Length: 218
Length: 238
Image (tube, rainbow over all chains, first blue to last red; front, side, top):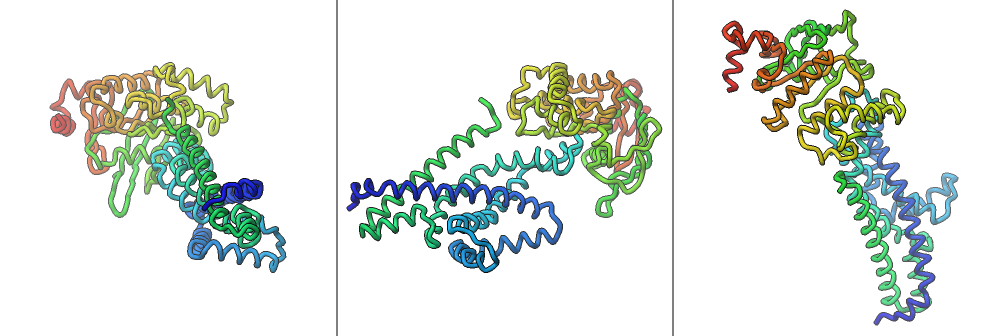
Protein backbone atom coordinates (compact mmCIF):
# COMPACT_ATOMS: atom_id res chain seq x y z
CA UNK A 1 0.00 0.00 0.00
CA UNK A 2 0.97 3.68 0.10
CA UNK A 3 4.14 4.28 2.06
CA UNK A 4 3.72 7.70 3.67
CA UNK A 5 7.16 7.60 5.26
CA UNK A 6 8.69 7.32 1.79
CA UNK A 7 6.71 10.36 0.59
CA UNK A 8 7.91 12.30 3.62
CA UNK A 9 11.51 11.34 2.88
CA UNK A 10 11.32 12.57 -0.70
CA UNK A 11 8.95 15.49 -0.07
CA UNK A 12 11.68 18.03 -0.93
CA UNK A 13 12.08 16.53 -4.42
CA UNK A 14 8.32 16.51 -4.96
CA UNK A 15 7.86 20.09 -3.77
CA UNK A 16 10.67 21.39 -5.98
CA UNK A 17 9.06 19.54 -8.91
CA UNK A 18 5.69 21.07 -8.07
CA UNK A 19 7.23 24.58 -8.05
CA UNK A 20 8.73 23.97 -11.50
CA UNK A 21 5.35 22.68 -12.74
CA UNK A 22 3.66 25.86 -11.49
CA UNK A 23 6.36 28.02 -13.10
CA UNK A 24 5.86 26.31 -16.45
CA UNK A 25 2.08 26.65 -16.21
CA UNK A 26 2.20 30.30 -15.11
CA UNK A 27 4.57 31.46 -17.85
CA UNK A 28 2.74 29.41 -20.49
CA UNK A 29 -0.55 30.97 -19.35
CA UNK A 30 0.86 34.49 -19.77
CA UNK A 31 2.10 33.55 -23.25
CA UNK A 32 -1.28 31.98 -23.98
CA UNK A 33 -3.33 34.99 -22.83
CA UNK A 34 -1.19 37.64 -24.53
CA UNK A 35 -0.69 35.63 -27.73
CA UNK A 36 -4.23 34.27 -27.71
CA UNK A 37 -5.71 37.77 -27.35
CA UNK A 38 -3.60 39.09 -30.24
CA UNK A 39 -4.53 36.07 -32.36
CA UNK A 40 -8.23 36.53 -31.56
CA UNK A 41 -8.04 40.23 -32.50
CA UNK A 42 -6.20 39.33 -35.71
CA UNK A 43 -8.85 36.78 -36.57
CA UNK A 44 -11.74 39.16 -35.89
CA UNK A 45 -10.37 42.47 -37.09
CA UNK A 46 -7.27 41.60 -39.13
CA UNK A 47 -6.90 41.45 -42.91
CA UNK A 48 -7.42 38.29 -44.95
CA UNK A 49 -3.77 37.25 -44.76
CA UNK A 50 -3.71 37.51 -40.96
CA UNK A 51 -6.95 35.56 -40.69
CA UNK A 52 -5.69 32.77 -42.94
CA UNK A 53 -2.38 32.57 -41.05
CA UNK A 54 -4.24 32.45 -37.76
CA UNK A 55 -6.53 29.73 -39.04
CA UNK A 56 -3.58 27.61 -40.24
CA UNK A 57 -1.80 28.06 -36.89
CA UNK A 58 -4.85 27.00 -34.89
CA UNK A 59 -5.50 24.02 -37.18
CA UNK A 60 -1.92 22.73 -36.78
CA UNK A 61 -1.77 23.25 -33.01
CA UNK A 62 -5.20 21.78 -32.30
CA UNK A 63 -4.72 18.93 -34.73
CA UNK A 64 -1.48 17.54 -33.29
CA UNK A 65 -0.64 16.20 -29.81
CA UNK A 66 1.12 18.60 -27.46
CA UNK A 67 3.69 15.94 -26.64
CA UNK A 68 4.66 15.69 -30.32
CA UNK A 69 4.80 19.51 -30.58
CA UNK A 70 7.07 19.71 -27.55
CA UNK A 71 9.51 17.07 -28.78
CA UNK A 72 9.51 18.57 -32.28
CA UNK A 73 10.29 22.06 -30.92
CA UNK A 74 12.94 20.66 -28.58
CA UNK A 75 14.83 19.16 -31.52
CA UNK A 76 13.89 21.87 -34.05
CA UNK A 77 15.13 24.92 -32.14
CA UNK A 78 18.85 23.95 -32.12
CA UNK A 79 18.65 23.26 -35.90
CA UNK A 80 17.57 26.87 -36.54
CA UNK A 81 20.16 28.25 -34.14
CA UNK A 82 17.97 28.76 -31.08
CA UNK A 83 19.53 27.16 -28.05
CA UNK A 84 17.08 26.89 -25.16
CA UNK A 85 17.12 24.91 -21.94
CA UNK A 86 14.61 22.05 -21.63
CA UNK A 87 12.64 24.26 -19.21
CA UNK A 88 12.22 27.08 -21.73
CA UNK A 89 11.59 24.64 -24.57
CA UNK A 90 8.72 23.21 -22.53
CA UNK A 91 7.40 26.68 -21.62
CA UNK A 92 7.46 27.84 -25.25
CA UNK A 93 5.83 24.63 -26.51
CA UNK A 94 3.04 24.71 -23.94
CA UNK A 95 2.63 28.48 -24.40
CA UNK A 96 2.35 28.17 -28.19
CA UNK A 97 -0.22 25.44 -27.70
CA UNK A 98 -2.14 27.57 -25.22
CA UNK A 99 -2.24 30.50 -27.67
CA UNK A 100 -4.37 28.46 -30.06
CA UNK A 101 -6.90 27.45 -27.40
CA UNK A 102 -7.00 30.81 -25.58
CA UNK A 103 -7.53 32.63 -28.90
CA UNK A 104 -10.77 30.73 -29.39
CA UNK A 105 -11.88 31.50 -25.83
CA UNK A 106 -11.07 35.21 -26.24
CA UNK A 107 -12.75 35.27 -29.66
CA UNK A 108 -15.95 33.92 -28.13
CA UNK A 109 -15.68 36.48 -25.31
CA UNK A 110 -15.26 39.37 -27.74
CA UNK A 111 -18.23 38.19 -29.78
CA UNK A 112 -20.32 38.03 -26.60
CA UNK A 113 -19.97 41.80 -26.09
CA UNK A 114 -23.13 43.38 -27.50
CA UNK A 115 -22.94 45.53 -30.61
CA UNK A 116 -24.76 48.22 -28.61
CA UNK A 117 -21.70 48.68 -26.39
CA UNK A 118 -19.52 49.23 -29.44
CA UNK A 119 -21.99 51.63 -31.06
CA UNK A 120 -22.29 53.64 -27.83
CA UNK A 121 -18.51 53.94 -27.68
CA UNK A 122 -18.39 54.98 -31.36
CA UNK A 123 -20.91 57.78 -30.79
CA UNK A 124 -18.87 58.98 -27.80
CA UNK A 125 -15.86 59.34 -30.08
CA UNK A 126 -13.64 56.46 -28.92
CA UNK A 127 -11.13 55.28 -31.52
CA UNK A 128 -11.34 51.65 -32.72
CA UNK A 129 -8.33 50.67 -30.60
CA UNK A 130 -9.79 52.45 -27.52
CA UNK A 131 -13.05 50.58 -28.06
CA UNK A 132 -11.18 47.26 -28.12
CA UNK A 133 -9.00 48.14 -25.10
CA UNK A 134 -11.47 50.00 -22.87
CA UNK A 135 -14.86 48.55 -23.77
CA UNK A 136 -14.61 45.16 -25.50
CA UNK A 137 -11.68 43.40 -23.83
CA UNK A 138 -12.59 44.22 -20.19
CA UNK A 139 -16.10 42.87 -20.75
CA UNK A 140 -14.88 39.91 -22.81
CA UNK A 141 -12.37 38.89 -20.11
CA UNK A 142 -15.04 39.00 -17.42
CA UNK A 143 -17.21 36.75 -19.57
CA UNK A 144 -14.43 34.25 -20.30
CA UNK A 145 -12.82 34.25 -16.88
CA UNK A 146 -14.18 30.80 -15.96
CA UNK A 147 -12.90 29.37 -19.26
CA UNK A 148 -9.47 30.93 -18.69
CA UNK A 149 -9.47 29.44 -15.20
CA UNK A 150 -10.12 26.06 -16.75
CA UNK A 151 -7.23 26.64 -19.17
CA UNK A 152 -4.86 27.45 -16.29
CA UNK A 153 -5.80 24.18 -14.56
CA UNK A 154 -5.20 22.32 -17.85
CA UNK A 155 -1.77 23.94 -18.15
CA UNK A 156 -0.72 22.72 -14.70
CA UNK A 157 -1.56 19.20 -15.82
CA UNK A 158 0.03 19.71 -19.26
CA UNK A 159 3.29 20.74 -17.59
CA UNK A 160 3.80 17.04 -16.80
CA UNK A 161 4.63 16.51 -20.49
CA UNK A 162 7.85 18.48 -19.93
CA UNK A 163 9.21 15.39 -18.15
CA UNK A 164 9.86 13.74 -21.54
CA UNK A 165 12.47 16.37 -22.45
CA UNK A 166 14.13 16.15 -19.06
CA UNK A 167 12.62 19.10 -17.16
CA UNK A 168 12.77 18.46 -13.43
CA UNK A 169 9.06 19.12 -12.87
CA UNK A 170 6.76 17.08 -10.65
CA UNK A 171 6.20 14.02 -12.87
CA UNK A 172 9.91 13.86 -13.71
CA UNK A 173 10.80 14.05 -10.02
CA UNK A 174 8.32 11.23 -9.40
CA UNK A 175 10.07 9.10 -12.04
CA UNK A 176 13.43 9.76 -10.40
CA UNK A 177 12.13 8.78 -6.94
CA UNK A 178 10.45 5.72 -8.42
CA UNK A 179 13.71 4.60 -10.04
CA UNK A 180 15.35 4.79 -6.60
CA UNK A 181 12.58 3.25 -4.48
CA UNK A 182 10.74 1.04 -7.04
CA UNK A 183 7.49 1.92 -5.20
CA UNK A 184 5.50 3.16 -8.20
CA UNK A 185 2.13 3.18 -6.43
CA UNK A 186 3.29 5.34 -3.52
CA UNK A 187 5.28 7.75 -5.68
CA UNK A 188 2.61 8.32 -8.35
CA UNK A 189 -0.17 8.48 -5.76
CA UNK A 190 1.87 11.23 -4.06
CA UNK A 191 2.47 12.97 -7.41
CA UNK A 192 -1.23 12.77 -8.28
CA UNK A 193 -2.14 14.16 -4.85
CA UNK A 194 0.19 17.13 -5.38
CA UNK A 195 -1.32 17.89 -8.80
CA UNK A 196 -4.77 17.68 -7.19
CA UNK A 197 -3.77 20.11 -4.44
CA UNK A 198 -2.31 22.56 -6.98
CA UNK A 199 -5.27 22.45 -9.37
CA UNK A 200 -7.77 22.68 -6.50
CA UNK A 201 -5.96 25.65 -4.96
CA UNK A 202 -5.85 27.45 -8.32
CA UNK A 203 -9.55 26.68 -8.89
CA UNK A 204 -10.43 28.07 -5.47
CA UNK A 205 -8.44 31.27 -6.01
CA UNK A 206 -10.00 31.73 -9.46
CA UNK A 207 -13.46 31.19 -8.01
CA UNK A 208 -12.86 33.89 -5.41
CA UNK A 209 -11.52 36.29 -8.05
CA UNK A 210 -14.50 35.52 -10.29
CA UNK A 211 -16.84 36.50 -7.48
CA UNK A 212 -15.00 39.78 -7.00
CA UNK A 213 -15.22 40.50 -10.71
CA UNK A 214 -18.99 40.21 -10.61
CA UNK A 215 -20.69 43.35 -11.91
CA UNK A 216 -22.86 43.71 -8.84
CA UNK A 217 -21.03 45.15 -5.86
CA UNK A 218 -22.74 44.04 -2.70
CA UNK B 1 -30.14 75.44 -36.99
CA UNK B 2 -29.77 71.81 -38.10
CA UNK B 3 -30.69 71.24 -41.74
CA UNK B 4 -31.04 67.70 -42.99
CA UNK B 5 -31.25 67.76 -46.78
CA UNK B 6 -32.36 65.04 -49.18
CA UNK B 7 -31.02 62.08 -47.19
CA UNK B 8 -31.30 58.76 -48.99
CA UNK B 9 -30.33 55.45 -47.43
CA UNK B 10 -30.62 52.21 -49.38
CA UNK B 11 -29.93 48.80 -47.87
CA UNK B 12 -29.98 45.81 -50.23
CA UNK B 13 -32.09 47.57 -52.88
CA UNK B 14 -34.60 48.69 -50.25
CA UNK B 15 -35.02 52.42 -49.68
CA UNK B 16 -34.91 52.93 -45.90
CA UNK B 17 -34.72 56.73 -45.86
CA UNK B 18 -36.26 58.32 -48.93
CA UNK B 19 -35.07 61.82 -49.82
CA UNK B 20 -35.81 63.09 -46.32
CA UNK B 21 -35.34 66.76 -45.46
CA UNK B 22 -35.88 68.38 -42.08
CA UNK B 23 -34.95 71.64 -40.32
CA UNK B 24 -34.66 71.90 -36.54
CA UNK B 25 -33.93 75.03 -34.51
CA UNK B 26 -31.93 75.22 -31.28
CA UNK B 27 -34.29 74.55 -28.39
CA UNK B 28 -36.71 72.69 -30.63
CA UNK B 29 -37.79 69.10 -30.13
CA UNK B 30 -38.42 67.25 -33.39
CA UNK B 31 -40.30 64.00 -32.87
CA UNK B 32 -40.07 61.47 -35.68
CA UNK B 33 -43.27 59.51 -35.30
CA UNK B 34 -44.04 56.27 -37.07
CA UNK B 35 -44.37 52.51 -36.94
CA UNK B 36 -41.39 50.20 -36.69
CA UNK B 37 -39.31 50.02 -39.85
CA UNK B 38 -40.22 53.41 -41.36
CA UNK B 39 -36.63 54.67 -41.08
CA UNK B 40 -36.81 56.81 -37.92
CA UNK B 41 -33.99 55.09 -36.06
CA UNK B 42 -31.95 54.80 -39.26
CA UNK B 43 -32.00 58.59 -39.58
CA UNK B 44 -30.64 58.96 -36.03
CA UNK B 45 -28.01 56.32 -36.77
CA UNK B 46 -27.01 58.21 -39.93
CA UNK B 47 -26.59 61.43 -37.95
CA UNK B 48 -24.41 59.57 -35.44
CA UNK B 49 -22.24 57.96 -38.14
CA UNK B 50 -23.50 54.47 -37.33
CA UNK B 51 -24.83 54.18 -40.90
CA UNK B 52 -23.51 55.64 -44.13
CA UNK B 53 -25.75 57.50 -46.56
CA UNK B 54 -26.26 57.12 -50.28
CA UNK B 55 -27.13 60.76 -50.81
CA UNK B 56 -27.82 64.00 -48.98
CA UNK B 57 -26.11 66.50 -46.72
CA UNK B 58 -26.45 67.72 -43.16
CA UNK B 59 -25.74 71.33 -42.20
CA UNK B 60 -25.38 72.90 -38.77
CA UNK B 61 -25.45 76.70 -38.50
CA UNK B 62 -24.98 76.95 -42.26
CA UNK B 63 -21.89 74.76 -42.37
CA UNK B 64 -21.85 71.28 -43.84
CA UNK B 65 -21.31 68.59 -41.21
CA UNK B 66 -18.84 65.83 -41.97
CA UNK B 67 -20.83 62.95 -40.54
CA UNK B 68 -17.67 60.84 -40.24
CA UNK B 69 -16.33 63.38 -37.75
CA UNK B 70 -19.46 64.04 -35.67
CA UNK B 71 -18.52 61.68 -32.87
CA UNK B 72 -14.95 62.96 -32.66
CA UNK B 73 -16.13 66.59 -32.64
CA UNK B 74 -18.92 65.68 -30.16
CA UNK B 75 -21.40 67.69 -32.21
CA UNK B 76 -24.10 65.04 -31.91
CA UNK B 77 -24.92 62.78 -28.98
CA UNK B 78 -27.10 59.69 -28.92
CA UNK B 79 -29.25 58.18 -26.18
CA UNK B 80 -29.96 54.64 -27.28
CA UNK B 81 -33.24 52.78 -26.92
CA UNK B 82 -31.65 50.25 -24.57
CA UNK B 83 -29.24 52.89 -23.19
CA UNK B 84 -26.09 50.84 -24.05
CA UNK B 85 -24.36 51.84 -20.84
CA UNK B 86 -20.98 50.26 -20.17
CA UNK B 87 -21.83 47.38 -17.86
CA UNK B 88 -18.27 46.87 -16.60
CA UNK B 89 -17.97 50.42 -15.28
CA UNK B 90 -19.55 52.30 -12.40
CA UNK B 91 -22.14 55.00 -12.95
CA UNK B 92 -19.55 57.77 -12.64
CA UNK B 93 -17.01 55.95 -14.82
CA UNK B 94 -19.65 55.73 -17.58
CA UNK B 95 -19.44 59.51 -17.75
CA UNK B 96 -15.76 60.08 -17.00
CA UNK B 97 -14.26 57.49 -19.36
CA UNK B 98 -15.02 59.41 -22.56
CA UNK B 99 -14.20 62.73 -20.90
CA UNK B 100 -10.72 61.48 -20.00
CA UNK B 101 -9.93 59.27 -22.97
CA UNK B 102 -11.64 61.19 -25.78
CA UNK B 103 -12.10 64.78 -24.60
CA UNK B 104 -8.68 64.78 -22.86
CA UNK B 105 -10.00 66.11 -19.55
CA UNK B 106 -7.96 65.48 -16.44
CA UNK B 107 -9.26 62.99 -13.89
CA UNK B 108 -10.26 65.89 -11.61
CA UNK B 109 -12.05 67.80 -14.38
CA UNK B 110 -13.89 64.66 -15.49
CA UNK B 111 -14.92 63.93 -11.92
CA UNK B 112 -16.26 67.47 -11.46
CA UNK B 113 -18.28 67.32 -14.69
CA UNK B 114 -19.65 63.87 -13.79
CA UNK B 115 -20.54 64.95 -10.26
CA UNK B 116 -22.49 67.97 -11.52
CA UNK B 117 -24.37 65.88 -14.10
CA UNK B 118 -25.13 63.08 -11.65
CA UNK B 119 -26.49 65.66 -9.22
CA UNK B 120 -28.66 67.24 -11.90
CA UNK B 121 -30.06 63.84 -12.89
CA UNK B 122 -30.59 62.70 -9.29
CA UNK B 123 -27.92 60.00 -9.46
CA UNK B 124 -25.38 61.51 -7.05
CA UNK B 125 -25.88 58.72 -4.53
CA UNK B 126 -25.37 56.10 -7.26
CA UNK B 127 -21.97 57.35 -8.46
CA UNK B 128 -20.17 54.17 -7.35
CA UNK B 129 -22.98 51.76 -8.23
CA UNK B 130 -22.74 49.33 -11.13
CA UNK B 131 -25.18 49.63 -14.03
CA UNK B 132 -26.98 46.43 -13.06
CA UNK B 133 -28.02 48.13 -9.82
CA UNK B 134 -29.94 50.93 -11.58
CA UNK B 135 -33.63 51.01 -12.46
CA UNK B 136 -34.72 51.61 -16.06
CA UNK B 137 -35.43 55.29 -15.40
CA UNK B 138 -32.06 55.77 -13.72
CA UNK B 139 -30.32 54.09 -16.65
CA UNK B 140 -31.96 56.47 -19.06
CA UNK B 141 -31.01 59.51 -16.99
CA UNK B 142 -27.43 58.25 -16.86
CA UNK B 143 -27.46 57.70 -20.64
CA UNK B 144 -28.60 61.32 -21.08
CA UNK B 145 -25.95 62.54 -18.60
CA UNK B 146 -23.24 60.55 -20.42
CA UNK B 147 -24.26 62.14 -23.70
CA UNK B 148 -24.42 65.69 -22.30
CA UNK B 149 -21.00 65.37 -20.63
CA UNK B 150 -19.37 65.83 -24.03
CA UNK B 151 -21.39 69.02 -24.67
CA UNK B 152 -23.02 68.14 -27.98
CA UNK B 153 -25.22 70.64 -29.82
CA UNK B 154 -27.64 67.98 -30.99
CA UNK B 155 -29.10 65.24 -28.78
CA UNK B 156 -30.81 62.24 -30.37
CA UNK B 157 -33.06 59.96 -28.32
CA UNK B 158 -34.10 56.69 -29.92
CA UNK B 159 -37.46 55.39 -28.65
CA UNK B 160 -36.96 56.92 -25.17
CA UNK B 161 -40.09 55.40 -23.64
CA UNK B 162 -40.06 51.91 -25.17
CA UNK B 163 -37.71 50.29 -22.65
CA UNK B 164 -39.38 51.91 -19.62
CA UNK B 165 -42.47 51.46 -17.52
CA UNK B 166 -45.34 53.42 -19.18
CA UNK B 167 -45.85 55.23 -15.87
CA UNK B 168 -42.47 56.91 -16.44
CA UNK B 169 -43.55 58.64 -19.66
CA UNK B 170 -44.25 61.91 -17.82
CA UNK B 171 -40.79 61.84 -16.32
CA UNK B 172 -39.14 61.10 -19.67
CA UNK B 173 -41.07 63.99 -21.25
CA UNK B 174 -39.82 66.32 -18.50
CA UNK B 175 -36.22 65.27 -19.12
CA UNK B 176 -36.54 65.82 -22.87
CA UNK B 177 -38.27 69.18 -22.39
CA UNK B 178 -35.42 70.22 -20.11
CA UNK B 179 -32.94 69.49 -22.93
CA UNK B 180 -34.85 71.83 -25.22
CA UNK B 181 -34.96 74.47 -22.47
CA UNK B 182 -31.17 74.28 -22.39
CA UNK B 183 -31.19 75.07 -26.14
CA UNK B 184 -30.06 71.71 -27.42
CA UNK B 185 -31.39 70.62 -30.80
CA UNK B 186 -33.39 67.54 -29.83
CA UNK B 187 -34.39 64.69 -32.14
CA UNK B 188 -36.64 61.99 -30.76
CA UNK B 189 -37.97 58.88 -32.47
CA UNK B 190 -41.05 57.22 -31.08
CA UNK B 191 -44.14 55.25 -31.91
CA UNK B 192 -45.50 56.06 -28.43
CA UNK B 193 -48.19 58.66 -29.08
CA UNK B 194 -48.76 59.26 -25.36
CA UNK B 195 -45.38 61.06 -25.33
CA UNK B 196 -46.69 63.67 -27.78
CA UNK B 197 -49.36 64.90 -25.37
CA UNK B 198 -46.74 65.58 -22.73
CA UNK B 199 -44.04 67.12 -24.87
CA UNK B 200 -44.16 70.49 -26.65
CA UNK B 201 -42.59 69.47 -29.95
CA UNK B 202 -42.80 69.37 -33.71
CA UNK B 203 -44.28 66.10 -34.86
CA UNK B 204 -43.05 64.61 -38.13
CA UNK B 205 -44.98 61.54 -39.21
CA UNK B 206 -42.85 59.11 -41.22
CA UNK B 207 -43.91 56.49 -43.70
CA UNK B 208 -41.67 54.44 -46.00
CA UNK B 209 -38.62 56.53 -45.18
CA UNK B 210 -40.22 59.91 -45.81
CA UNK B 211 -41.90 62.58 -43.71
CA UNK B 212 -45.52 62.63 -44.85
CA UNK B 213 -46.97 65.20 -42.43
CA UNK B 214 -45.62 67.67 -39.86
CA UNK B 215 -47.28 69.69 -37.12
CA UNK B 216 -46.52 71.58 -33.93
CA UNK B 217 -47.86 69.39 -31.14
CA UNK B 218 -49.92 72.28 -29.74
CA UNK B 219 -51.48 72.92 -33.18
CA UNK B 220 -52.13 69.23 -33.70
CA UNK B 221 -53.97 68.74 -30.41
CA UNK B 222 -55.96 71.97 -31.00
CA UNK B 223 -56.97 71.09 -34.58
CA UNK B 224 -56.55 67.39 -35.22
CA UNK B 225 -58.73 67.58 -38.34
CA UNK B 226 -56.03 69.67 -40.04
CA UNK B 227 -53.52 66.83 -39.68
CA UNK B 228 -55.40 63.72 -40.82
CA UNK B 229 -52.39 61.41 -41.19
CA UNK B 230 -50.97 62.12 -37.72
CA UNK B 231 -54.49 61.95 -36.28
CA UNK B 232 -55.03 58.54 -37.87
CA UNK B 233 -51.71 57.28 -36.48
CA UNK B 234 -52.48 58.59 -32.99
CA UNK B 235 -56.00 57.11 -33.13
CA UNK B 236 -54.62 53.78 -34.30
CA UNK B 237 -52.24 53.68 -31.35
CA UNK B 238 -54.88 54.40 -28.74
